[in-house]
Length: 235
Image (tube, rainbow, N blue to C red; front, top):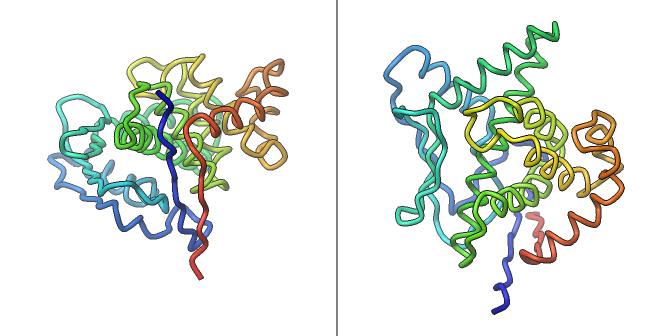
């Protein structure tokens, strides 16, 4: 049975991740229970990672909250994405540790952390889009959606998102960001969306050099397989 056509309609108002969220998306930040969770909440809010211009087939709730485990998840029955403060904190601490090892500055660590949070959200958005369009491709398909929505929604943040996932690929327990093969495939799709603009992805080695020439084809096949993208510019 052929897959239904999936239209991801993008209302473009600005070119920043701080653009107003889609009207179908509501975001709620629950009260944190600790100073560390409060810091994670403020980091998540300031990053703008939970805002998107992607129009969704049905309303979706996004809830940031305290959880027992550091995780992010999609609940199809409630049409709810949950982002745990403990996961945000884990990403922040891991990125800070990497920056200290590399002797990178705080601004670099902050940019990488924001890129990682964008990937986390768009991965869950991918689960939502997959489910609401009658597909069930698991994490691999959610990653494919995430690459498409990131490239369309925030192309200026694609490079830092690929870098962040590459850096976290070998760190176990970072929900949906771990895995070397998964990171390389994600980077390939992002690079293939615009090889000229995203050349740093290939230059940084975040996608294997021998694979880079095929990434445009990989991106086009994924885009064709899971639906056409209609772009609407708001005047």
